[in-house]
Length: 395
Image (cartoon, rainbow, N blue to C red):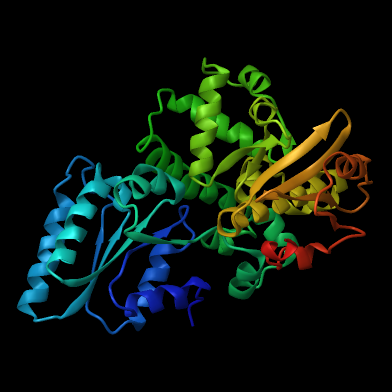
């Protein structure tokens, strides 16, 4: 049987319940949004109508109205009391949220039982319409990158394989051929995400610069690199402000972020050197990996891969659990990750293999008195347990 993500039951339940809200499935590319919807539709007994905006002219703002009207007409002809309309990649159409609002409200006034499901890229979709035009009219179901448990259940992966190859299900059959796997990640996953989800939906004046920043940031995942120094490694002319704005957009696409340093002073956070962090370790490996066998036996290199994997897991849970993720460093003292939720602070230090503990964790505790300070890995919570736990339990 085809593998079903844990969201399957939730989506099916909402599809079968009375019409209340627009249901939005949001998440990065290639995490299974369309596949999940196909699985749900195969189980749902309601008549359904599926459309995909990918390939439609972005300026064809009347497209959504036309398909909506065609569904209404079919419901009337077939005397269907209720039905489901699914629009995939809806954010590709300009001003989509205003049109969806208009049509949804029209159905509400006429008591038409047409349930609507929208699929699209993660926070870009939120930023460009949901909160402004559709406030109070939608519920959000987030689909993130695949976890260790999911890759293990679906493909039989080990912990080390998930740490190294990340959580893209489409790449799973290719991991025995590094060159082929790397090309797939770059050409089939990264390029469409950058060219379609980022550049076409945001004001990017220097696309080449953004792409260079993305590659550089992936290579530096779990490491600190000032944007000023990053400029020195990029070929296209730009400035720190431009890089910062591009990094913010990449973050909204669940690709790459720059973690801020934890501090009580908000201004100091924004002025801090960013700690680059990928959302999926496949992005680190595709641009920096030498090969699983080589990197696995290099304790220093492997320690960085593990630390980055911890970061990906924490990022993946951040929106759902409702916390902010930071790092902390003062001179040679550092804490790998700091979680903050509603004033509660948790400090996490990643320790793998022979990597020794620094004095960062005790000094952080002396300065900030966190609710918890934990070691992940050697002499702490085993990695296998950490990557399966619910981060909310830490609070």
